[in-house]
Image: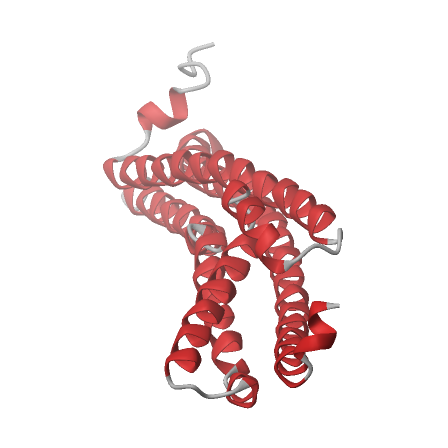
Length: 240
């Protein structure tokens, strides 16, 4: 048997097919690197989000969770909380400097919501980073493989134009070599498609949790404003 072993079809492929095979191999290496890095990052984000929510359900003051958020940086909820608290402190200083009351703080609640939206947008970009490459690989790899096959089949038939009686023995080697690029394209595209859909599901779950948490935080800050109003109107009751 003189097929050159497993790598025989790759070695005997033409220059055009070899360029496609090398390109597909590079795409495969990058895809697997993304998979390993993304799997670790999303697993850590999901684990720390669960820990964050379990501590946040304790009913303590918002500012008691600032240290928790600083510890669980991989959770997107931590970024939302820190952004909201930073905006809250800034607004309190500005309102206090202008001698305005809690009514002004109530009207400025949308500023806190916008700060959380900006933080959520940054976290979404971070979670979705590198996923477009997997999506592109899923779509492009099979077409690259098919392009190599079509070119190989065309080259085989063009080489047989002068033959008096083409036989299967003359056609089969060229066709089999040409199919190598299609196989390579599918080998690259299938794992990339699996990784992409798996990660998209994970990211959507984290973003849904982020939306719910942002809505909950908005309600908490509204209650904080009400408490400021009550403390100002009834300072004796606040002391009691």
